[in-house]
Image (cartoon, rainbow, N blue to C red):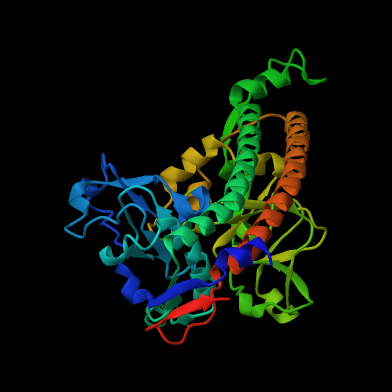
Length: 428
């Protein structure tokens, strides 16, 4: 008998419906127009973006609200669970500090009568099982949403506190190790970003110009220009995911820039018919493709350099940018903190963030001569290659550990199917 089977042997598990285990209420978004709700706020207000960037245990948010913003709704208590119930389905987190979350979340706080029978961390881990259920039980109208009526009727297992503690201890070992690996990966990424931003700064570009053969004694200084002066933005059109076929003309959909492509590519993963392709705007070799719609400011404007030999079509909610300068040099600059500052001043929207070509045309950029652009690209390509090697190794390790975690989670948290909530279930 394995240690897990030994741990759960003869364990009596009480089953209750989720609606009877938790105090449940929806998230809330204070009016963005009312500055009193947001200026000098001290209360964390979580969005999906916080969940993606911090992992599944949240301690603080990027945005904070004031007491006036609460409007008598009360705070989500420490140790409660928030579950994404629309758009991105199923992701959850345990809240450490008293806080609020936006309306895409539903909050689950342990009922007072069960506070002494449930560990918040055990609940947190069981919500991973609930996550999987949510992804397969959605209702679709204008956007996907969890079937909340069915969710509230789900059975929730309550083993003894001692067993909960052992389960938490076992699963913590895997999640803590994954967290450490992810932190290491993040540190290396930050190191790369530091050197990239330094290399693309005005001071450094002027210094490097002094050391490039053929530029000595020319008194060269970096010139600042705008994207509109050195290139042309073309807005995409028409392409939808339902148009994709297995073989045909190559295309890129704006959403794929976030999920499927890195810094550059010479092939697409999607194709359409000749008829659909003929109606689309086209990008050519060395064009930069820029996504202009996102759920957050940081990601909007993400780009990919097209290095394929053939023309490709591209969708709406994105632009192609064609320039006489080195496209990869510009695309690297699009990643810098300086470029981010300009972008933040021009984005529009709250739930859905947009950036427009007319505004991007006015963005300022330091342009050295082509020899320096090529040298900068050569250096950053090497940096990016080293980072990719690191990202290739660490994510493999992370993926393996996550598989182990999932295996043990299933073994520890699958107590059996209970159809009658009035009695207990014994794991044998």
